[in-house]
Length: 443
Image (cartoon, rainbow, N blue to C red; front, top):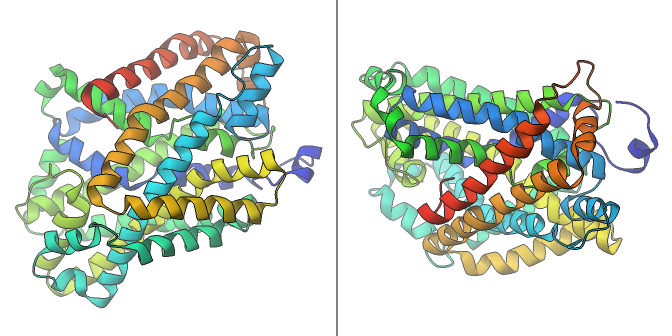
């Protein structure tokens, strides 16, 4: 990292890999653990990987690169960056950046509740309550009922504050450098252990033997696109804000490529744990969201003495994924409050967390929180991604987009990337919005 004035006056990531680990932490969330295995199982096993990997490649080359570059150019969060761009071009709508900020805050508020569930399951795994309960469905129902987990919800917020008060370099970067490697190590260990379960081979067959007929079904491509789009955190907020803390010396294409690779690796590791385990114990691999909180705990019970250890390892890994995602989601509104109202970081954190806690209390119900998260992911998140893309590729122009993509990179950026971003990525963002509304969500 270079000793620029920007670096001295604004907290920054201290290394390329610190930035990449933080972005991977943002991308790797609970959806990697339940949605990717669930959809792989539902849409043709290895055949599903073909549209998924195509979508990841396209979105990383256009969307992830664009959001990092936009944030780095703006040197602030979505609101400030988008206002700067529109002011430079003498265009109205300078508050449009509030949309991705609000979506980030709303998702973070809901995510804090779910993170509280994960922490409660981790504690229940340690005490043995998860593997000894007579009914895993009833166990989860007691947690996700009205005001069923406020204490754990608030504990998740307190842990988030503890990470974020350290700032970017000493807080977010430092913690992600620990949590993300541990996440991969824990899932790799579980994948090895699952491989020795009787009947696991059927799960591997289902996962790796392609059912080619699914490639002819539009739903396979639609949900692969949705999974890739939301898994890469394309919403015009989290990647933009992290990009604002990145040195101009860094190659954002290298960063985007590694974010996509490790995010996909995390999803594949989760699939290699969950699908063979589900098959080994003759359960439904397409159980959807209940897979993580109901089906898997039931599997842990069937594992006997090792089940408790496996449960601890699993929910510890999920906690790392959740914690790394939640700090990214909260960083966007915290930075906005700090920059817009000229407040210290600690005061801004306190304001955002208190408001989030006050709202979150009334979302403490599984049905309500599900609707809340769907509302944000269907409407606000893809809209934020589209706004950021239009500003970068269309409003600021081809020359600007090329210069920002080239900044910090030795190898020339292909000229084709500009029209690819303008037409393909912006078109995909519009398509995601339309499909999300039509189908009630594809993320």
